[in-house]
Image (tube, rainbow, N blue to C red; front, side):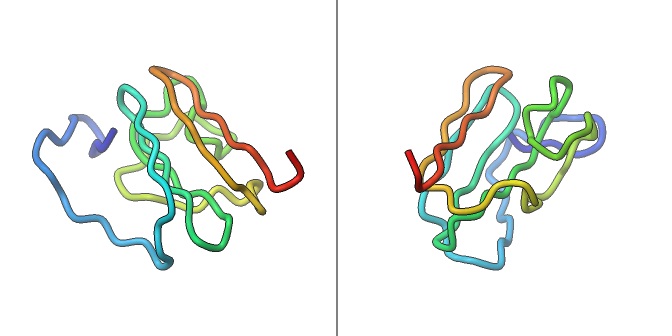
Length: 88
């Protein structure tokens, strides 16, 4: 779930996120990171808007999804992402 602009990165690569990570979910070519603050960061391929940023731009580094707050769990499938908020 980690890519640059054109290719998948096939070796482990350190990525930095400003907050502690509570959970990670991996799709086929994208990754989700749930922080201890209840926010979600995502990166990777985004052909199906699976990163949650409202576009189809691929992201090589995790970016916070601005619309997701108070999240308690995340999941990912091949081309989808899921988040459960604190109210459910």
